[in-house]
Image: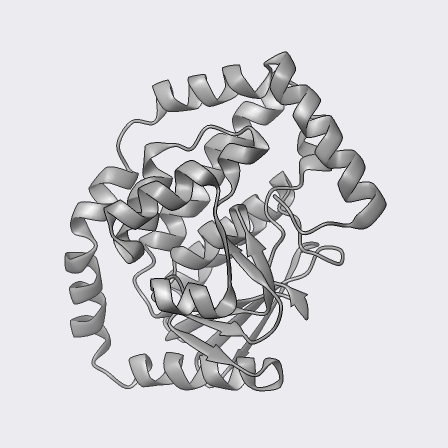
Length: 259
């Protein structure tokens, strides 16, 4: 029984809707459920493509800092290991995978979106991007590789180093999203794109996707142990903990859409 997402399948197209609270913050349970679901859908011959979406106003607000802050050392290590597994599972998915970005999508939410083949974002006063560094989280190299796959290395580097969050129109101009849709038409726009991919020969499409992502996937699957150890060391640093506490206070009082 899944508690953090819902899946519907119609005419060989699966729609995964993130469904955890108002802003879909990513906790360990969601990471595991989404990873398992993607693996199952990849093996299901009755499914030809997948759409990943969220709720009105939020695709996902990123890592659930309120919950993650209280993880012990073993729990936070397992969380990050499994989050990187989720990233790689999404990025190496053989079938068409379209993100219908229904609202704010900072940090972890943005990572889910950039694993997909195509991103349609709802028009509105929403932000998307990777703001890990201002939050106090060291960016692993695999995230840079994924970001730069779409943005180019120069732009990805600069955006990451300043923790830049982009409004919808800027995200389109930067190549971070591929299409803007009125919120009411978002799912239909994503379905249209997914079905356009699904009409092509599945073997040709799939093998070509993996060929074009071969170098990326090699980098994503490289050993992340050293980077993870440094991330975790910094996670427990007093300055980081203090910064996270302030951010959590803000989240609890305002439900601010940050990581």
